[in-house]
Length: 307
Image 1 (cartoon, rainbow, N blue to C red):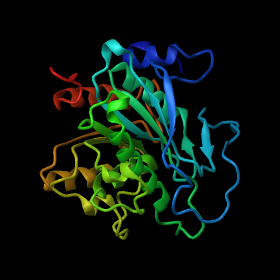
Image 2: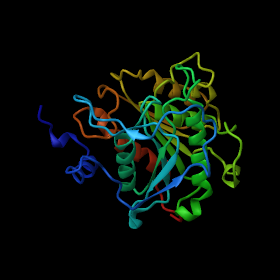
Image 3: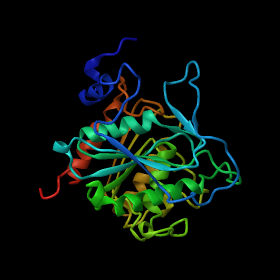
């Protein structure tokens, strides 16, 4: 079927067309990478082999699937100076805690954030689950990496030129679960402090969950939904009704936020399935980035310092 360009948000077309030749989307500004941990990451067990991208299989959506991560990093993409708002977002790609959808739910998201004046910071957290982790529980190593990432970015806010009070977290699918986990479990670290950065708060100032997974698991004592409280940061949520990863995850989180009187906005689109990222399509879910931008503006997150 031939797609109608008019159905696509203009900023999505602009981002995608700029890298059509390579099939990859890079963020607008120069990028740099920092280690999440000063030495070996805590909580490691067993050997999983070398980090690598999985080969693309015939018929699969074109996605860079990164796995066997033992060395977590943060890749920082800065917006153009003349549009920099000082806000930043740590991005947690999805992949079922088995892989990270590195371009679809990482680099491409950083590019969109740059386009609205936000520093995009892609978190390469540890996957797959480590030996001894039950298959029905998310791996604790990923939460360690995410908590540490928030503290580390906040501790270096001055050098990074970002506002330490406008640091968000955004995740997709399993990364959406990880973002919710981080946003509701900031009062107790899951690892011993390793340096001065761990004295800084690991609470995100806001969170964006896009087709988050596992939030419908009532039997999980670590379910972020059951840990929502009055100090949980504001959230924006987006999901497709026909997603194989049930939209009850987003509904459950939204209802918990409302009950706790935490500001929240939820969009459930009729179609879109799972794993749509922000790539252009005729499905209504492709409008979520604009709705999210509107929410961030109304929330005062995109105002440059001093304005």
